[in-house]
Amino acid sequence: MKRNLALVLACTLCAGLMATGCGNGQSSTATTAAPAQTEAAKETEKAAETTAAPAASGDVVTIQIGFENTLEEPIGQAVQKWSELVEEKSNGTMKLEVFANSALGNKSKLIDQMVMGENVITIADGAFYADYGVPDMGIMYGPFFFETWDDVWTLLDSDWYKEQCDKLADKGLTILASNWIYGERELMTKTKVVTPADLKGQKIRLANSQIYVEGFNALGATAVPMALGDVYTAISNGTLDGVENPLSTLYGQSFQEVAKYILMTGHIKNFTTWCIGTDFLNSLTDEQKEILFTTGEEAGLYNNELQEAANEDYAQKMIDAGVEITELTPEQIAEWKEAGKSFYEMGSTFGWSDGLYETTQAAMGK
Image 1 (cartoon, rainbow, N blue to C red):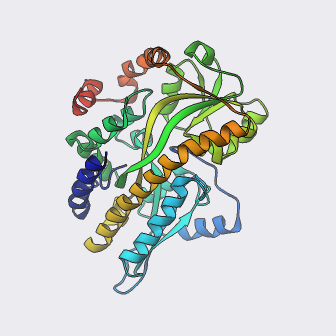
Image 2 (image 1 turned 90 degrees about the vertical axis):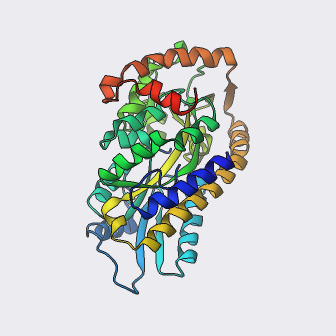
């Protein structure tokens, strides 16, 4: 995996300096959260209303980076590391202002701001990029699309992925880094689920993306798009029966207090990306662009180390909190994959290119 990430970094530097957005650093919560109603958040939103202009020589370039997760989660720690790296590599001439817990607003709002040219970075993935004009990217977030993490890195090294990133840059969003592991998404429910039949009709929270929603509907659930920040209450009062996300996020959001069963489906190998508005990026110097790309990649490697170390710890914390964790046998995984096959027959619904599934499988060497 380290070899693949090194290749990704090399490609990224070239692409980044050309401002094409191609993988641009390759890498959950691809989730949507409601804006925090703090005074700091209000001030931030007020500041974000002004479209960023190119910085004058000698000015400090300040970029806001907003995301839904807490600072205590591995991804939050890695974002803080990224901020430190940017300040260090730029000798203090660039600054990333970190806003966790949706303090800048939800993902859709931030992406809209970025397309308008504002000085914002946020976390997103192919399911969201599909909704912003590059539909083929959504296939990577269908159920059981990747079998291993090596499959992920192989696809991110491919010409196919570079082409998708170039298309996204033309739509107004440039990917800075794609090598961030968000985690394997697992299923957490109020009643025990083991088979697709157990899931049938259960109301499961999904991020507000057509790809995520239809993917879980294909597995038999009743998918409910909802902001992550509203899920705890919705499970508590019975509006929802469950939620899916990596263990770190499930624990970070305290869902162990309201749901006591986790099924380790790993239905999505969730790598995530960080994106920036193409227009704002093009207002920066080549040196400033390079700093964003290279530090984004470096922070991604740090994130991945934290994720690997933390996963077992989060599983144990869940068990200590009274959560029952069920591992699937190979035969049971095959049953879930079979249940999800109908999703990949919906290509016309998502606007996919003809033969997309076969194209991406070939790009992974299958």
